[in-house]
Amino acid sequence: MELVIGRVAKSHGIRGELAVDIRTDDPDQRFAVGTVLHGRKPREQKLTSYTVEAAREHSGRLLLRLRGIDDRTKSDAMRGTLFLVDPADLPPSDDPDEFYDHELEGLAVRLTDGTPVGTVLEVLHSAAGELLSIRPEGQDAGELLVPFVAAIVTSVSVADGVIEIDPPEGLLDPE
Image (cartoon, rainbow, N blue to C red; front, side, top):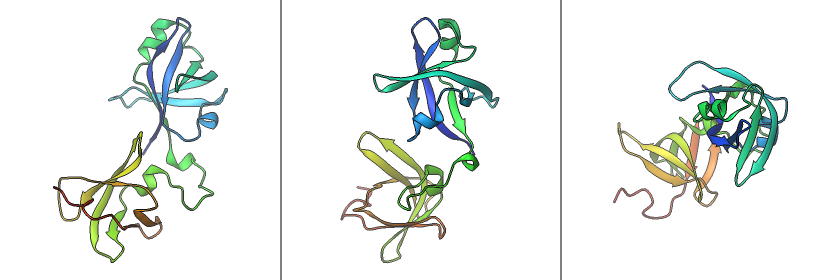
């Protein structure tokens, strides 16, 4: 499994800079000067290594300059490239209330009374916050979206493989 930490949105300027959409909560470490990034184009399997020469924030995106990408043509060819890390290379979180997305995916979700709700398919990141995309119990299709907030998610046990929720009335109703 690979985790996406950034995606090249477009080229920036004529000297090969890349505008990158950040998908990590630690961009200063992940995109530090001298860091070797592993990237691949969507729908491709081949990973390519890139060394960060410069990084700076600009209009809500990260502008990167990578060794060997030094003109507009080369940076245009990078559009859509995903920068990836192996989950095994990630340090454990010091905060018991913080989780990596991949740690939550696949966990069983149940109500506080033990009633099964489903299984976490993925964690969605939106402007309003994180949502758990849950496949309803006993179904092969469908999705329930549950805000990943303390008022609803009462406990998470990665070790036990369970998330307990206390949703407000109507949240889990399909209609």
